[in-house]
Image (cartoon, rainbow, N blue to C red):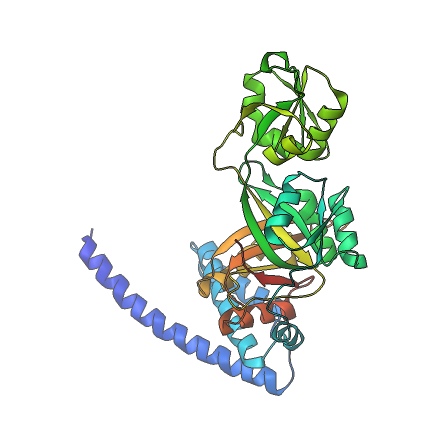
Length: 374
């Protein structure tokens, strides 16, 4: 058996040869791209890709699966190079270049819930000079933006304890409005009831389903019966209206004060760092100069390696993915829509080139925005 130094020397020699061969292959990919540009041919040729991958896998046994994965990566990088040469995504590029860079301040902003809800507080933080308008459901907020009743909508998309708000992601993928801002807001809950109640009286609590998840251990440890309702501010309002000694709301301190309730216990969330991410939706695109988060969505078939092949492109540019959310396409078998967040600024030529190439290549692709997350 050879010693480790001898084996590593062989690896170094092989790597040197592979690097030179890789450079030659990418030079050929460049020539192919220039030919396709001159002859108005598409970059993507799925049939030829499959033929090459199948052939590589057969020729590389017993390492066929590994070789297939390696060539999938090489092909994705080759396509990225060719898309850059062809100048893909001209329409999308023009939309991005002509976007405004500053959000207006004195505007109507929609949110789901009533005064005192977490979404109301987030809307006030994001638009301190705005005129907030409340709506009954998440879908109503999207409709209000669509109809021009409000210019922006503020919606929760993710909680650090309870996870994604799936209903909002479904609406994002349905409407494809732009995301023009985001806020990470710490969520601190209290247990509150009418002035005559004491902690020992409480048997049942009402709050939003996400809040039940965020306070699950606390609820179980005290033996409370938990009943979901529309949102935390509605819970506070209903407790104030029902005036039952054994009923309490889990809500924000603002909602507790808004509806004249008494705090029975505070900081009751299971995790102290409990945080909810809110986004701002708009039919108009705004991209600030210092934008640091990009969102997009696209379709992918339910086949092996389809998502990996896309993620390879992000990895090759050193782009950090921060969120991947998949949602099934209703009535379309096992086809999926994917929502992605990653760090970056669209004015970076490499990030713009990647997004433009994906817009040409992928079904159901939408650039959803480039914005600041505060």
